[in-house]
Image (cartoon, rainbow, N blue to C red; front, side):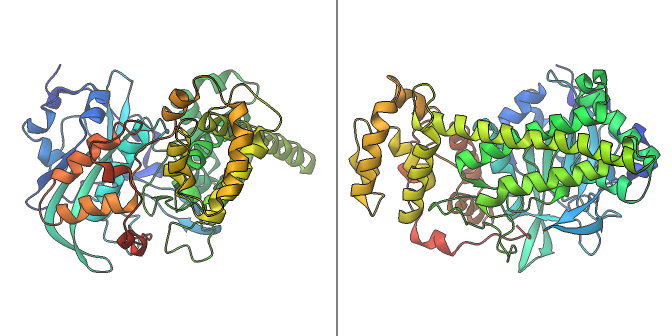
Length: 486
């Protein structure tokens, strides 16, 4: 293993040119300290276990230094926020460092919270300890659940005060992904009529992240279809674990189908299809049940951005090009439906496939909603309900209705249903109150709960040593709220 300051860094995104970013140094945290590191993420990068103790590591990941080959920059993008065109956005508090050469190929790294950039608008470019802990833990928790996601390598902290609803302290979280390119990058150049830059971005993304699309008759259409399928897979996985993103703006949608930008996210406790995890989402645009439709809407926005790259000389050409892009977006519908049903079948431990499986799953979800049964615990207890139905029955008000449903379900289960269900229905997810416990301890300079919780979340399908990690949330948890400042 080369020493970290001898790593090979590449800067392919920087080769796109100044239209795509502003190069600038980070504004480092004063007197930084380590808050947490992810051994699993470091292993993904091929880094040694003691990487954080290497000289200059703390400085690099708190924005106070850079290893040779890093080229800090903030990218520009635009997007729709809550369904409304928001104009130019960009990396307002994120700074791209470059790509580390890893066994898994180049992995981009970003510092989130390293100070103002030209795209900060009225913001200070900082992240607070609270939100950084939430993003760090959830990034790694989602990876352990098998959900495509950006990763989090570490958090550094500082006594630097940052004003949100109250005065908090600053932190920087280091994010890792093969690419951070979003729908909004394409929307930006399409909206501003920068056709050459739009084409360069599409060619760049296809070459580095979707090379198979280059062989298609129309690479851009093939790319959109690929993104639509990946997005369908991702949202189906969110729905299957009761995860709510909270801010599914087009600038928060990954071209790789990754869970991107952990702000006001939440795992549902009591099941409610209309659950809104973001206190700032007053109209409930991003409610749990609406996530598939919003993703589909966002794909249409991406299609509109890609349209100028197809023949658009006259009305007939425009219509034909539009239809080909819309057909690519339509791939989302069937893929999502198929993926969602497959995941529900797995969660229910069903043997094979039957025409009545969708209705069976929907009927359980209706019973859960009527009783506000806990989403994660319901499916975990269902995993053992063939042998132990009483713990599951305790979650429901109408037990007779549940019993009738169980009578329909049992004959459809596979011989090894319990083992299969326990492998897909997690015991532990990052509930808000678990994150809050780690946050409150960290605010008192105790980071051990972050480390403990990271280990528990890294094995989500195992029963935790502490039963409280998998228990119903305490009463005080119902008062917790997350918003766009989270």
